[in-house]
Image (cartoon, rainbow, N blue to C red):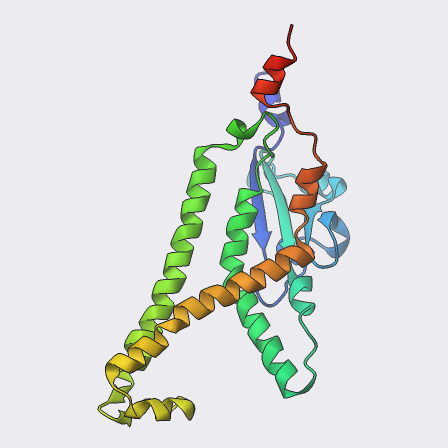
Length: 245
């Protein structure tokens, strides 16, 4: 009888599986046949999937003989499918459309780590007792992770643009990196300082571009603001005190 509460305790760990650029199907992420997974939230653009109740009942891990796709009792396993967002990029109509679509897909790939950080922030329960309930070490750690991701992106872009392209690819007035396109040959006549000043704009341009892409995606796909706006707000402490006896 002592082991019964542990066996019936609800899951307390969320295992979120996210596919890459190959747009793996949700049931494959869950290691299940197609008819043993169901969508629990989202739409055709982005959605969350879980094993069906029947599948969990048949495949619940027991000892060392757990079948593929089984989930331990204390874990809630979900799959997040975001491939519809990439497929909704502008159609490649003409050379300009091809370039825009390619840049959009590159931007989606660069935004993926930040999207996972956002998913981690939304994976716990929403606060229901005022702003103070939302402050926790988890929120701080995830925000710190997001800052470190941004620093990594900016530092990598700066190193490639300012160090590799502006300095190492040129010897005097000669372009050594012959794989670079023609416009870089025109920079061979510039001084190293001028090349560094120009290419130092690359990190800022990339950051602004990702911000614009995320802003557009937030307007098109994100329903968090609408969800929070529909939730009843708890009264402020001052208002609650004023309404008291």
